[in-house]
Image 1: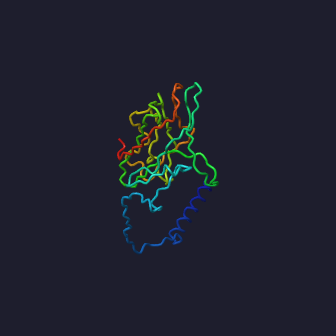
Image 2: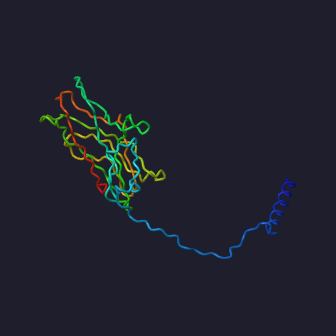
Image 3: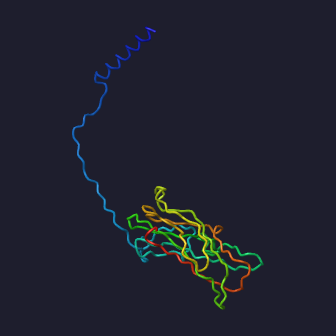
Length: 237
C-alpha cells in the first residue's frame, strides 16, 4: 500500500510541474468588438397570375390544375378540391362511394391518373395570428327536375398535414379535422391554426379512399350537383 501511494504522489507532482512549466498553451485575447447583424422581414403580398414565381408550391399530388387558386392577399387559399363521384348505379343498398377525379398523366399525356385531394393555405402575413378553414355543402339538386338527394353526407377525413418547410417545429403545425357534411348544414371546422401556428404554406391532403359520399338507397335517378364552400377566416376562433 505504501508503495502505490508513493507512485501516485510522484505522478501528481510531475503533472503539476508540466502545466506550470508552460506546456499548456492558450492564445491570449488581444482585442474584441461586437457588430450588428440586421435583417428586415416584411409581410408578403398576393399571387400575381402573370408571374409564376409568386405562385406557391402546391403540396397536393397529383395536382388538378382546375383546383389551383390565386390568393389575392397575404392570407389566402392556394388550393381547394372539387369532387366528382362519377356514375352511381342504384342497387337497393345504401350509397357509399369514393370520388373519381382524373388528371392528365405527366408521363403520358394521352392517359389519365387519379387526382390528389386537399385544401392548401398560404399565410405570409408574418403575424402568427392563426386562421381556420370552414367547409359547408349545399343541397344536391337535379338539373332537370325538382328532385334532391335525400339524407346525403360528404365525409372528408383528417388528412396528412404537409408544409413546404420540413424544418418547421411540430408545435407550429395546424390541426386537420374529420368532418361529415350534410346538405345545407352549418359550416364545419376543417383545418385550424391557433396563434403562432400555420405560418407559411400548409396543406391538408386526402386520399380518395378516405373521402365518402353516403346516401340512403331510396333516391330518384338524375344528374345531381351541389356546391362545396371553403371559407378561410383570419382568426382561429
